[in-house]
Length: 188
Image 1 (cartoon, rainbow, N blue to C red):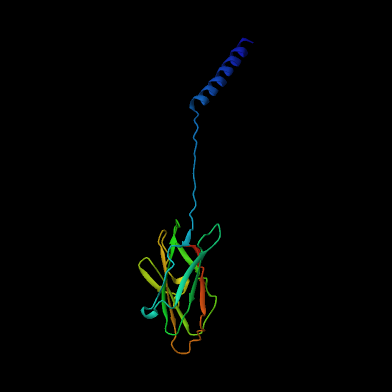
Image 2: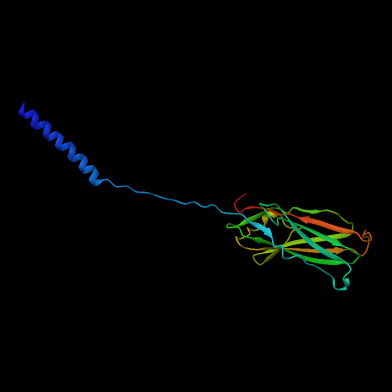
């Protein structure tokens, strides 16, 4: 009986030592991570609203740019209105899209539409970014290189009213809207 007590005592001491050894050698590691996602944030610079007409315009034709959008996407639309056009009038307009995105972006669509079309009015559209100008009449949007993050985009618009065959009504107005959409760079 004495041997069984000693054996029980030795087993009890061994079990306690295992617990003490486990507690002595245990450790804890805490890992805290933060993940942030990229952001697409493009909008028109609404401080640019000047339409420049040809030098012989004599302040006849006038133009304006109105910016609109939603609470979530302010200044996402530009509407250009040209009044008092006449045969031979030309106008140049530069719209700037500010790119506060944190990743490169691509054009998804131009969103260009004539609100009040006039026969004989020709509009040439091009964009400029990263030092290169692209003619939007001849380029496929999917072939354009990615627009780097934080890179502003200039939209260059040239408007010409034909001197022959132009159906420009007196006191007529011509307008178009531009609402481009963008996607992230790897959205093929």
